[in-house]
Image 1 (cartoon, each protein chain N blue to C red):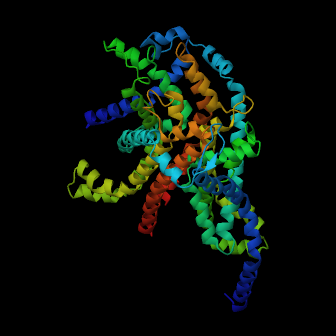
Image 2: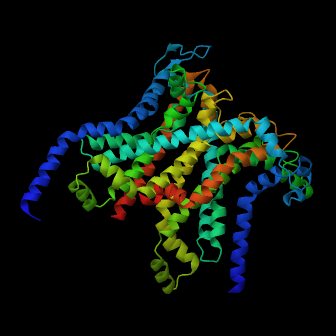
Image 3: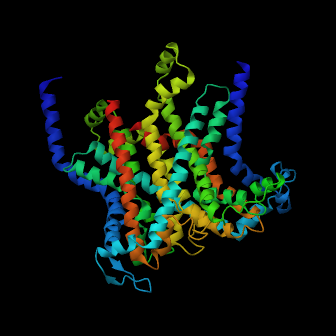
Length: 304
Length: 271
């Protein structure tokens, strides 16, 4: 390339650089306004709200300071709700991950018509929280739900799934695992597809059986995907709301009162308590997201 | 060998039946008369069909109006997110400006703030604007997303340098390059993001429940709540409601499955 053209090009770039920032402002402004108004401001405001004590009419009440956090976060009702949420995460995350991995491995086989099975395994991704909850409400109805009709036919007592303290959280967890299954299947399947066939083939030639190939070749290469799915499912567990609102209303005896449901119930009549609890929710999700970012960062490194 | 293949198909089919059962049950209950629901297992193989449950669900859940509301809200959210994301992504990919890294980090930081954690303050803001029970309340907070910005920026960064130089030599400015080259080349990423954005917007539950209380603005997901309450005597209602609210997403998945998979996995595999 001729030298004058290059020099001219460089000049244009330098000249443009000076005048380009107003364009950047125009391009970024719409997003920045939305983020400022509905993400950054409310985050700061929520932290501030948490230091007040609501008056009996749902107003802001008086300023108490950071000690308000201590009062809210050591309250029996918050700790109970945090405990229920942790139990819920323990019920949904490992189960969802295991089932998703199992389905992904099954769907990864080279068989005729496998596409139909893959579509069915991903199908729950099409259901919203409300749609999935209504489907499970239909299945788990105490008297005429199909599960209990089947149990009765088999000579078993019907189970009051959603109104028994021992069963309610498990039932909400079942509906949740099912609803997330499509997502988990899709993500883990994509991870499986990125495992190079040559590696599996050379392991096979070395005499490794299918189980050893899976454990020693597939699983290590899949671990970042599994960790990603693990983090997303954990964050989902901490953000769960709709299933509780539709299936159990937090009951019976607060046994399904997850954190977000607890916050939601207090949003309009006790905003300060709700805010203090929301800050804890933010902290937990932030921690999980940072773990996820670390994982992605490492993967980009490996990719290079 | 043959028995092994049969075994594989048997296992696949068993899993498919279990996974699909809740959807299948909702559909068969929604298309049969109420009396058939207690006839297990006969209910699983419909003999007579009726549209009555759909009519009842539409009427008692007011789903017709709610479907319109959901459609309006989803259209504005998806359209808005696609536009703001393309604009911001273009700035990060092709425009020189000071503090780019800082601004980009701030954009990504929004992904770490779950909507559930800011509902208290956002509720206060919406109330302050006098927006409770309005489309603005349902749409405005969701008009931008760092996920879309990030996804489309990645696609923009893949546009070959030669094309940028050629476009500049032809005298195209930034707008010409954005419309004529960058957006057409980033179409797969934009399509994946559009489908993903539609799915999230249509399926929202917590926020619409919090900020709307009237029939004129409630979305179909919230309409399902009233059907959930009325289920003890009549399982047709919640089943039919679930089918009605789920159908748009079902068709979305049917026609755009590839895009949706791309959108869902871009966080995990693309890195």
